[in-house]
Structures are given as C-alpha cells and as structure tokens.
Amino acid sequence: MKKILIPLILVLLLATLLLASCGGADQEARDQVRIQAAVAATLAKIPTQTSHPTQQMVIPPTPMPLDGLFCEYGFCVGHPADLYLVDASILRNAATPSTRAYGILFAFNPNLFMQMTWTISGPSYDYSVSHRIILEETDVITGNLEVFLLRNLNVYYQPVGPTASDLLPYGAVASWQCGGRDFSWKVYTPQEGMASGLLQQSLERFRCE
Image 1 (cartoon, rainbow, N blue to C red):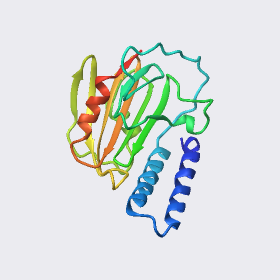
Image 2 (cartoon, rainbow, N blue to C red; image 1 turned 120 degrees about the vertical axis):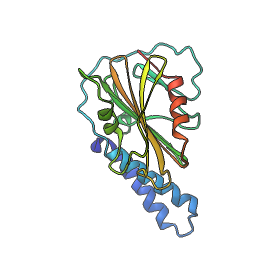
Image 3 (cartoon, one colour; image 1 turned 30 degrees about the horizontal axis):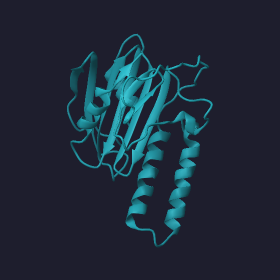
C-alpha cells in the first residue's frame, strides 16, 4: 500500500513545504496542510495485497439518484454530497484500479475523513479482524461494541478516538458482510456523536451484488 500511495504522500508533503514557506499563510491554510499530512499517514499504513488480473466488470445503471452515492466494483454506498470517494489504487496507476475482490476508497475535506475497504470473505467472519484492517495505531476504541441489523446486514460498530488527526479527533469504525465480501468503514469527525449518523447515511443507500 505504501508503494501505491507514494505519489499522494509526495504531493501532500510538497503542499506542506510550499505552504510552510509562505510566512503570510493564514491559519486555515495551515490547518489544511495538517489534515492532508494526517490523511497521507493514515493511507500509507493501510495493509494491502497483490492484485490479480480480473475480468472487467460492467455495473448496470443505478435506478436511484447518484448525488451522494458511490457505485462501482459491484456495490453502492452513500456519503455526504460534498465528499467524494476516491479509489486509492488509481492514485498510483489509472489502469489498475481496485477490483471487486479487494479495494480501498477514501475521501476527505477540512471537516471530515472517510475510508472504506473490502475483501473477499474467508471461511469464518470475525468483525475485529475487519476493524483492525482499517484502524490506525493511534486509533483508540472509546465505546462499547454495538451490533445491529439493518435490512439484511449485521453491522458491527464502535466509536474511536483520538484519531490520526488532532483536527478530527473523533470517529468510528464499522464492518459488515455482503455478497461474499467483508466491508470495513471508518470516519474521522470534528465533533463527538457525528459518526453514527454518517454510518446510517452510508448504509441506507448501500447495496451489493
């Protein structure tokens, strides 16, 4: 994963150096740099695996509004309309995106960081393994495990904090299974209590093939 994200990290570090060299940069610009550096560090630590050539999948048209909705790789998931999920693999090479079997998405703005991963399910399911895939060393579980049923999804949810960014110190992690795959979801937020609503927004429009 580190090799995949080297271009992103270099770009973010370059932005950090350029902004740091401008003595007149305001506080907002410096905060943006700190967020970007935290995002780069988070993504660089995500475990990955060697991708294998797969047949190109064709996703049929989605019979629902696409505003605030990501649809690709055989699933759809909701997200805030002002947040855009990006395929981390494409940052390295546009010709080798994530696949239906394995992938990583992320999105961030000054007020939010969201991340999602998926892998092919193994013979048994352990939610804690799915959580560890997406959690950082600095992420600390701060609440009890919540398990709830949403439609046909068994969802495992836990608040986390402090996070990898001191500007987004709250968050949560969640995981579930669908269509023979394990999905993990994480969010960092500026205020406590926001994560559960964001997860609900994501899952209300979630579907998989």
